[in-house]
Length: 591
Image 1: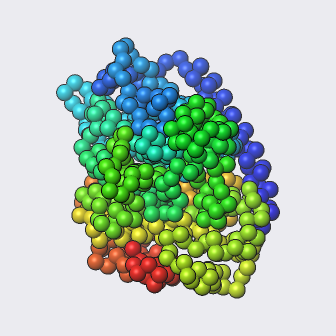
Image 2: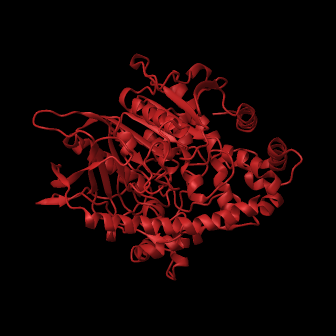
Image 3: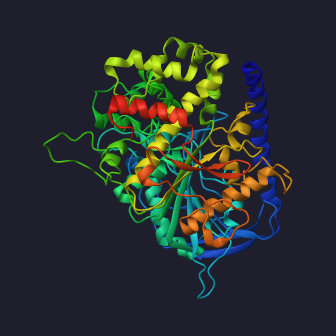
């Protein structure tokens, strides 16, 4: 089965690369052949831009106004590399906003090819209604934070077409933020870390100051994101500097409490990166940074994986540069040194324990049933991975589980619960997907839900996406044939994907699920409730109830999104109870 999947993947990977080339060639040809565009000029706080009106690609009648490649920050180059970016300067004349800006430097997840430019702090705005005279529609605003493990991706319409969402009368903003070492390298106060998250803050400030000119309401902003974007949303819910910049939040398949979401607060990885790129100077942070600021961005990105150590792999750390707690360079009893305002100076777990988060924000979060189907991709890259895990199952014990003296016992308990008498191998791939789905995604998301349900002043809504359909994004990209809903598969039901142009029957289940998803997400942005009772919407016949804070430990209510909508209690109950027991027993608290 797995061998057949691998062959299918290699075939699809070739097909995918050809589709990419054809898509871009088609786009270039199409742009040259266009005879007429309807242009519209908008005045922002920094200057004027010219966008255009374009027809929906989703088959709907009408269209929307599109403003692409709007610069929200100056190029973070030279001394600004590894530091917070500056807002864009004012300009004269009219800038063209008909094409997307550069993506930030990264390697493509599928093709493993380098792409991007450091001059990448661009955003895109899409809306169906523009201000006219004294009239401003003041539509709710949704700001999308893309995923990609803080290492790859962009906010561009290639993956995140606006057609479905803007048709529901919201303004959609998508954006780029710095990735990998350029976005998250840390080496003391002159490279404090979290540059990519500070880019998101800068973009949200741009939205606050400018979105009214596009028909949006700056006091009605929802941030939403998937995977690392979902974790970013939660990080913004924790960051003091994000206060007042948004009013609702949605995290899809990502939490700041997931084990991949936070890195080590240390100069060590930056030093390894410099050494691997040829630095032979003193072990001096200033000199290391001077060296790294001279290295071409492509070399930084390509050398990034070489900083991962054997210990990293044993701890399931596959993302070398991710968010960190800033201020680690400060010594107790001495005055704290910061060259710029820090994003966070405590761990997310510690901040939740102290109830230090933005409590007046309605929150929606959830996961897909088989998130860790991505594990198949790792398995294809390293066929011996199953054997490695079989011989070293201890590597799967969570790092935040306090089991120093009982590690072997805990290893046996986890193995017995998930695998029974099976060995780690081809015959237990399904069990391994369940285990990694819980370790890497579900457990952290459930802890997040409980914290918000118990200590927030606003409702929290939880979902489980379990519809395995033709619009499943990542399964199609990766050529996976297994049943189940992979990480990222819900995205095809929210965004118009650039080149997977399926001809779906309007009466198909895929279209119905897509319509429901778009309606619930945009309802939440509009009303803070995905299924408001006063709307009498035939599309949404089931009321989505928030999680009750008093019963959050034993009665997690959630919306199961499949061929129908159904409110249920306690997703993955036995697995949830297993991890609750483990954390209560070894840490003293399941939260």
